[in-house]
Each structure stands twice: as structure tokens, then as C-alpha cells.
Length: 306
Image (tube, rainbow, N blue to C red):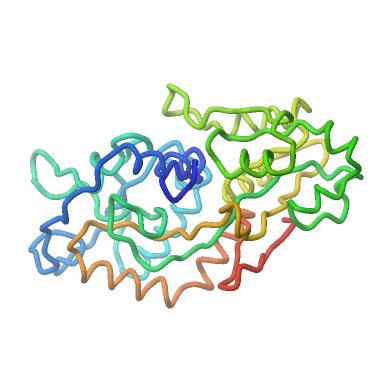
């Protein structure tokens, strides 16, 4: 599903994929009445904790071991705010925002957490900061001779027609991948995978990776961070590479990701905007380490073929 409506997600994509589906399934909340000058909350004087809403089993975004790129961004933010990071965990699917950012502790009556590190720009269920990442869907392929020197997903269409028609391509339902396959007469070559399973601890991306590793599919089209995750965790056999999709006027492949906060917390939102604006280089360094394909402001691919 498209990150704009989320399941985003990533995209997002078991996480990223899950948030966008959530937005389509829940009504937009009324603006929260939280005040920036409250005695508790993210901007309270003397606050020493950065309370993050996150998923404990959602790599490459996050996990309870701190191994995701959102964990690393949260750590960098906490460092500069001189706070310690504290997480509220909930599966990033139906009810995520309601049970994290908008939920209060039964004892303290304070909000359980104050920040979602990754939501789509303009997300319906939260106020959003300026974007810190612009990524795109991508194709993951083994580094085989037929894919040699390919820089982006469109290059795959240059393969001989008989070869192209034999490819088995793994995709998630309701993503731009199905539109792209349909547009190029390849939809019958799709191997369809579910975005979510009944197990919140299972990462659907690992299923796609297993299928690709076993040779059951020849390529996979996934949200950019997921593509980087698959490449980064792959060991043995042929090396895998990421072939990003360039921006397209007909099919939306690229999306901007922001941080999510409660409606009405203007000072907190502005503080995060200021931090993001002055830390793009550090954030990009984190994202690049996860092999995430990134686009610049003109839509040009910054790190093709990771």
C-alpha cells in the first residue's frame, strides 16, 4: 500500500507499510489540546527523557534492541537534547497512534510517548515535521550477469523480451509495484506477499528475503528502506543490489518521511524542525549505512546500486 495512506508502509513495508494502511482505516483525530508550556510533556522545563513511540519488531525501522535506523535517529536526537531515550512499544499496525502517541499512562496521566520517528509527510493521524528522508520503491536483484551495470529499476526493461517474461518478481499487494508490472505487461510474473501476518513479531520482509535467497523469485519490488534491509542482511551466495525507481509522473514511487507529534504541540514540532534542519548530513549518514536509496530535492537518486 502506498506510504501516503499507510501502510506505509515502509512502506513501510512492514512497518512502513503498516502505518499507511492505518491512516486509511481510522478517522483523523481532532487536534490535541496539549499545551507547549505544560508542566509535563516534551517541552516541560527540566524534562530529561525523550519518549519515543515505536515498534519492537519492525526492522529496518526499529526494534527493542535499538538496531533500526529510527532507533539511531532517536539516539542522535536524544544526545543533542541531553535526554535519555525511553520507548513505548506497540505493533505498527491498526491502533498504533491511538495506543502510543495519543495514549496516557493510567497512573501518571501523562502521555505515554511524545514522538514517532517515522511517518509520511502530511500523515493524517499526527502533525508532521519537515521531512528528513525522501526515498523510493526499489527492486532488489541478485548480482547476476543479466543485471550487470544496471543502475535503476527501469534498466530491467532493457532485458530481452523472452528473458523478461521469465522473471518471477515478488511484490506486496496494493503498492506501486503492481501498477508498474501492469503497465509493462508483467503482472502475471508477480509473486504476491501479504503486508501483515497475524503475528506482530513477524517481519514480512524476511519472508521475501528467504524466497529470493532460495531462488523462488528472481527479484523483489519493495519500499526503499526494506530494499536496503534485505541487501544489508543478506549473506552467502550472489551479492544483492538495490535498483531504485526514479520519480514517475504516472506511478508514485517516492515519498517523504517526517517525524510525527501530537496536534497542537507547536513548540515541540518547531524544536524538532530545527534539529532536523541542522542535522541532515548526520541523518543521511545513518540512512546510507542501512543502504536506503535516497533522492535529492530534484528527484535524482543519490546512492544508486547499493
